[in-house]
Length: 329
Image 1 (cartoon, rainbow, N blue to C red):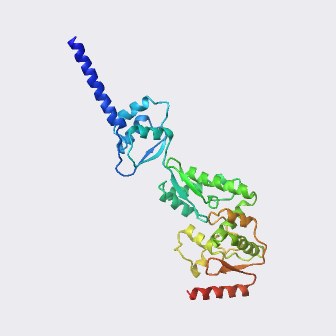
Image 2 (cartoon, rainbow, N blue to C red):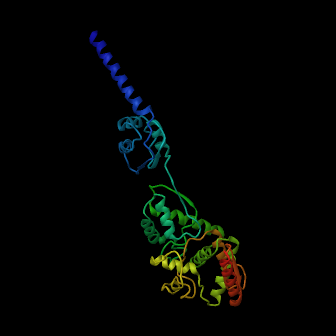
Image 3 (cartoon, rainbow, N blue to C red):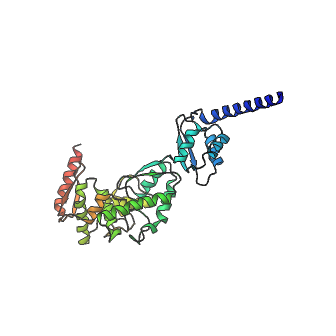
């Protein structure tokens, strides 16, 4: 009888010890030391996941976490990146992984951003290197092969918007999401033919003015010049030529207008060979539906808008007015 009581006492003590350990490992909250990001890839075993969490200081015990999951195996743990910064116990952590409460990186792409700008934004968001993004942009042209079969990159088709990406997504996934958004917008506005030419024109318009109501007027200037075989002389295209060559220093000078590039619309009449940025919806619409004018020139008025002219004489007066306004500041 004494042996039975001793055995039962040992069992009780063991049960209490296990219960205490589980309470400590599973129910007692743990506060991470600062922000802790844990990246869990698809295919990780439960033990690998628990090991990553314990190494990050998010849970106390790998074995306790695995044991808890064993009794809740109907709830699979989702791959992804997780941010832990508040006190939580292992059960809370398990619940987050089960519902896939992953951390997303927000990437804001303003209208007119070039592929170089977007690549930097992706890198700044912690989603990978800018060079890897540019590689995807130049290698995934099949995404627009039906729209722009001559496209050498996806410049122009990375639609400006706010995106939420995760670190488990590849650069190709991100690029595809941007192209998908472009396709949706193109469908909305009826852009179905001469896509490459229209997007190229829209990208120039986007760079020339930030005032939406001016964009159809700017479009009319460039279409009028094309019809008369007058060089477009678009400064943004020269900047883009230098970006491609890696020589842009942040400002244009007179010597830059002689750069040897098909994107230099001072030296080469007609349209550049492709878009020089990624236009937004209003610039695409302006390129599709330009205003009907007899304008061939425009220049800044010094206050964020432009003065338009039909003749060189009128344009020269507008330029003089702009210079006078600048001197008065």
